[in-house]
Each structure stands twice: as structure tokens, then as C-alpha cells.
Length: 162
Image (tube, rainbow, N blue to C red; front, side, top):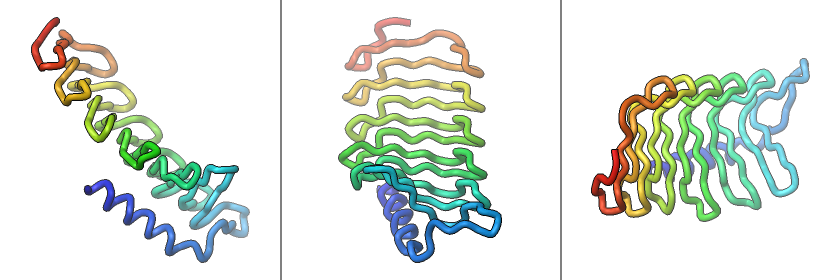
């Protein structure tokens, strides 16, 4: 529900600002709200001094598919991907265009992968899930390398290998 409120708020903010879009300054740098269209794909967001800044959306055939936050033209903050039914399929956190933070993948509204990154490398507990929500695989990572044992479980949650 919080995600839907966030998405709704973002879209309403952008829709009220359409009066002055696609503006360049005296130096030819893109400034303010821009709507960039190519066939059935529309990218929309803000530029500051020619660089993407803040939340950008991508719509394909009038369906919102992507919300990505930028700072200084690099992914910075959360990126949310949605399927054709407007369900979230992934949430990824970036810092300076590199994965940095918790990344979640969803299938039919349920988490199927939970991985944390630090400076682009897997770090900490990595969990993969069955469609029924039970843990399928559990492993620990340090700076992109597996650390220790991996545990595998059956779809009832019973440990089957380590």
C-alpha cells in the first residue's frame, strides 16, 4: 500500500508540472521537467543542468513500468519495476549508479529474492524463496563472495542440503 501511495504521489506531482516542459537554458542544457517520447515509450522526469535529477518514470503503451531516482545523472536511491498488471516486480537501491542496499524481487506480490549489495557486491544474507513463501536457499556473502555454507530447503521448509 505504501508503494501505491508513493507511486500515486509521484505521478500527481509530475502531472501538475506539465505547463513548462522540455526547456533548455542559454547554454543549451536541459532544465526542469522533460517528456521524451519514442514510439510507445515515454520517459519523464527532471533535469538540472543537463543531468537527470529526481524521480524518472518510464511508460510503455501507457503502462507505468519503471520509476528510477537519479542524482547528477546517475541512479541514486530506489528503482522500482512494475509488470503489465502494475504489480511491483523488483525494488533495487543504488548509490552513484551502483547497487547499494537491499534488492527485492517479487512474483505475484510475494518476495522471491532478497539480496543486499554494498558498492555493487553481494553482502550479507541472501534468501531465495519458493512461490509459496518458504525459503528455498539461504547463503551468506561478503564483498561479492560466498562465505560459509549454503542451505537448501524443500518447498515445505525442510532442510534438504547444506
